[in-house]
Image 1 (tube, rainbow, N blue to C red):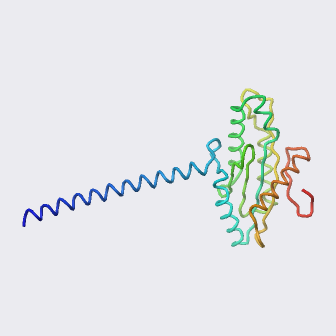
Image 2: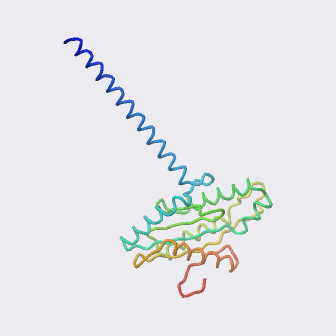
Image 3: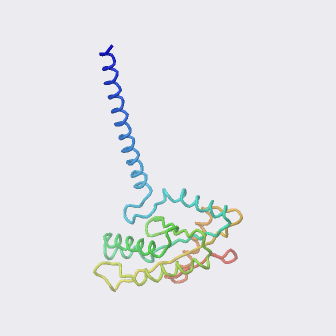
Length: 208
């Protein structure tokens, strides 16, 4: 009988150790999955959200705006003549411009605002709980700070500017994310046509 009790005790020790080891493995796997998700959802160059993370993030913000009846502003930002930077100074200089631009945008916004690298030299900014009137302040700050920053290494005479298009969801009525992005995009291209380095706000009754 004593031998059996000793054997049972040894077995329980092994079971406890195996359970503890399994728990440690699960923690490692969970940490790995979180790190993998973070890498998948973020642009490696700028550290911003990428388009993979865009729709889940923006749909949640739009749903929250509808539930609260609060406005939300979406802005599309595109660096002017960015191809010339790559052509004249190389892609390394272009990467520095993109990183600097991302940093300027993030610093100009609140913690609740979202910045996404939409593609290439385009950035999408979402300002929840913000009307177009209030968004003008933040967007103008971004525009002026980008124009003032010397971003091209060893070429301080080079000025980088940005064209911005913005649209407001008022917080009531149907809201379609793709439609809002398309309107912000059209307003941004109108800013390009009007001379670049400016902000255009989408107006429903105005051709964009």
